[in-house]
Image 1 (tube, rainbow, N blue to C red):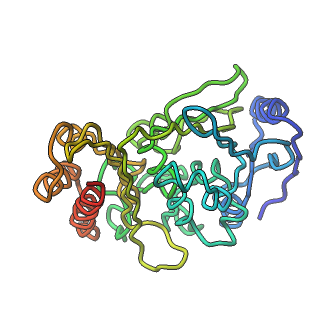
Image 2 (image 1 turned 60 degrees about the vertical axis):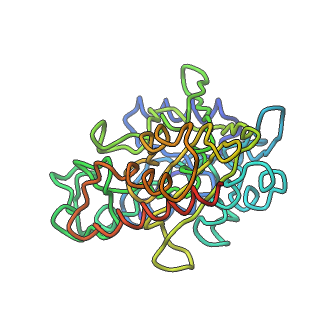
Length: 327
């Protein structure tokens, strides 16, 4: 691991200022909250910063506050605290379950919600020091001709990574917003717009620019009559990343869908929202036939690699199960 200087930030303003200063000096600086994921990146020599700015020393960024209309969750709120929060478990339908599916208990007690959303890919080519893949400045994505069992089937190319966050699909399904602080001030955007496809920029996973950090997530309260479903399929029941994950929120009345959100994890470089399936479901009675058709529409346009065709059927059936559970 390359040597670096650790700086304990005392405020968001200071952290943003330091990031901006080091960027102007052409020095590589990064921020850490829980630090579990970033430390592994440093050990793997994927990132080698000159400065690491510690956000844990900023007071008051680990809050979880319920207010009229939703929940405000500070960037440093731990995944374990979200998983165990009584009001979140009761009112946000799927978020506690998604947080509880992330990593291991030890990591959830250190890892933060912002860190979970800002994770880098867990592709073995990206993480290995033996490969200079496209995302690390190379010329190609080795997954195309190599081992792509767990890689993307939707929205991929030229890179075929999948976004590893367990909370991101759930939060997108819930209509969450993310607050970003930067040199120009603060901005709030829909979380769905935070993530970047490789066709837009294959070197990055999100829209954060130099000097910007995530400070808060706002999750609106689901509307009356809404039911949620979260399920993550993985190779091992212990700590593992999603092969396919599905998060649904269905608002219905008398068995007829008023509104539906269907979001998948483990199948694309971003949390993949199945908008065609959502549009199809609106105004329809939710039964086995409509749920099956929604699953098929959600995977329309999938372009699997030679080793991950199986993901299509898995995702379709999991969506169908999730929708029927919301009746």
